[in-house]
Image (cartoon, rainbow, N blue to C red; front, top):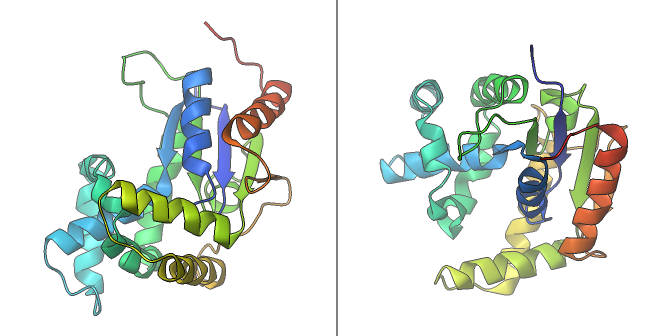
Length: 231
């Protein structure tokens, strides 16, 4: 039987989707998928192969995406910290907006939601949490729980700057802020699956809440909508 315990989490970069997803997965024994990391993984792989990212060869990019998806190696690349480097950030929007790549990734994400993999400790996942930009609107429009996580561009830029510094990279706040704003515009205005809040998604602004407050609020909503037996 296909999994029905699906939580869709959407929102812009740096809003706190990943932090919330990880915490909720640990609490509910759900499998989590950061769909943004999939596009970053493809981008990083292309960069490491020294592909010309300023003039992307569509045929090459599409075939590479199929191979990474079919072999599940995309999940290995998604664990590489370099997927969040400044260089990857510079090109990921160009990769993510390619319709054919989004089609391949859409099916990958749908399959994950319907048939979530076992947890790392071997236990069967009780559900799936999928985060991205179009999960509640395109990937899992029938998900019983949907959140849209946001924060001000300034808040998100500060978080991303700290992330770069922690990784040992040199970065400038104004440059990071400009990149965040540009990525938002690209995500909202792309022709295929633009980022938007689903009509039935619950909005959470993490500029106003700390991590614990955000988790407790989301947990309350999930407990009301889903009947999950915790062990």
